[in-house]
Length: 208
Image (cartoon, rainbow, N blue to C red; front, side):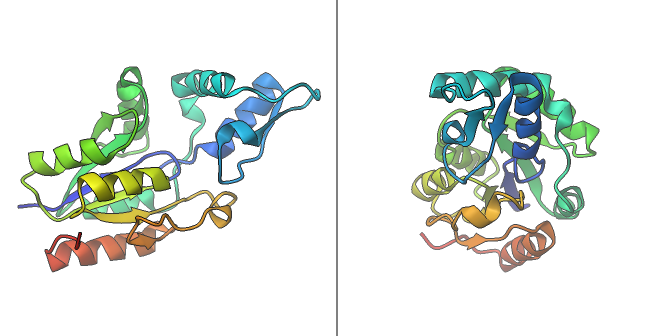
C-alpha cells in the first residue's frame, strides 16, 4: 500500500498573497499588508476610505480566483519535492476553493508541471482528509497546510495523520506561530521532503 500525501496549494505549492496584494493595488487601489491574521484587517484603501468589509474581502477573493490565477508563481522546490514523493506515494491536492474553481486549479497546476488529483473543499479539512485516507486504504498519511484551523480540524477527524504546518511566503511566515495541532512546522520544501519521507519510511501512523 502506497503512503498518501494530502497537500494544500496556496502558500504551500504556489505563492498567493504577494500576487493578490499586487492585484489589489493595481485594480482596486487597496494596499494589502498580510499580518498573519484576518485578510480583512490587512486591507487599507489608498484614498483613505473605510477598509473593505468582510463581505467585500470575500468578493475580492472570488474575483482573484480564477480570473487572476495566472499571476501565481511556484514555491521554490515544491514541484521537485512532490515529483520525488510521488514516486512512492499517492498525492492529492486539497484546496479550499469553490467547486467551480477545481478545473482552473487543475489547469493551473498542470501549467506548473504538477499533474496530481485535485479536490476542492469549503470549511474545515478534517472530514475530507478522513475520507481520502479511508478511500486509499488507511495508509501512512501526511497532511501539509498553511492554516492552523485545518491542522486542528484534521487532528480531530483524522488523528492518525501526520500534520506538517508550512507557510512558504517569507513576508508572512515570521508573523505566524506554529499551528498548535501540527506535529512540525517547516517552511522549506527541501527540509519538508526529508521529514515526509522519514514518516513514510517508518510506516506507522501518528499517535493520536
